[in-house]
Length: 278
Image (tube, rainbow, N blue to C red; front, side):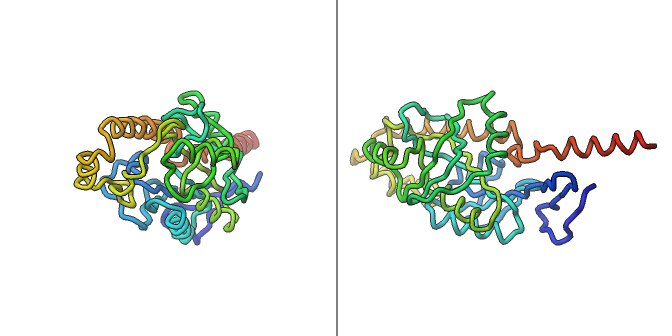
């Protein structure tokens, strides 16, 4: 039996089955960068802090870089009657075994010593699908307040937290999900390895949504604050990270395998039962 909640938003209806009480997830996705958002949908313009429907059951809010911005975007999505949040984008490696393009599906999110939950059933299902196509890493994803620009910073954070990777937004989104009592999932691809980090000087040429101030970047290259080789390394890292994120969407859709649930079997079994009784 399918019950429709008449109070749902335009994103779609929550579907509940009597058996098992399964609830179809209406997903709100937070991304910080335009380059991350473009892995989800082919759209040239992503307005900051505006909720955009990108699928029948999925909405996106581009937050810009940082935990505070990500928290605001997550809260904005929660106002749209979503019942699951996803942090989607790139991360920095804190483990020397990780390379650009590796997919991180953390089991735990850490922020200032606080442990934040992940929907493990959902996470494990996505892991089972994606591990057939890309290298998938588990473990802890920790927050960082600023971009990690040196190997020493990454090592120190990894040793302090036991995390394999870090980003600036996932913990903030996870915290909103935990406070709201809804599902959370982090999908992160490694963009820079332990041994290579974006130089601090480069941050001055990056806008909050991750796009680049071309004039400022040229100045940094001309005064040798940033080398062409470094830019090539960064571009290659982002390319393979985006490829991994795009692969997730291609293999699981914009619901990230959230609809690979027993409700399909329950519905089929119920239909067969009705047919047999006839």
